[in-house]
Length: 143
Image (cartoon, rainbow, N blue to C red):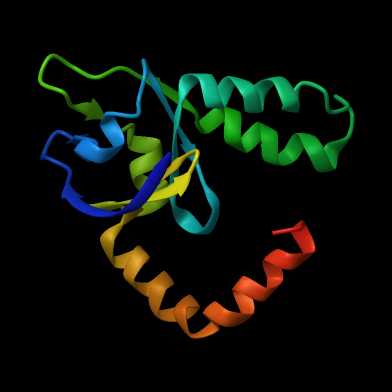
């Protein structure tokens, strides 16, 4: 399980380290792909594979289903850490998320979100005022 918020930096070669609290829950490779609101989703390969399996059940000719899948899968990268425990952030995802050097990792249960620090701060400023309403909205999902 991934919980919490951690600030880190990408180095000049676009390499990053995962927070230690997250890294201990990672078994094997990770997958990065475009996420919502301008973040990058970081998932264990096994969790991403579960998503791929569910997505493969969708009708191939249903454009409403295929459009987001096309964008998710085409932006996805399977990463392995180097000998020093770092991962290389692909340039397409770095550009998508607007990342320079300061980054924030957000634990969201079964996945991690990677944000440009400035975008995360803007998101918090916008959404925290609606927190009670957002919580109430979870009831429609049975939570």
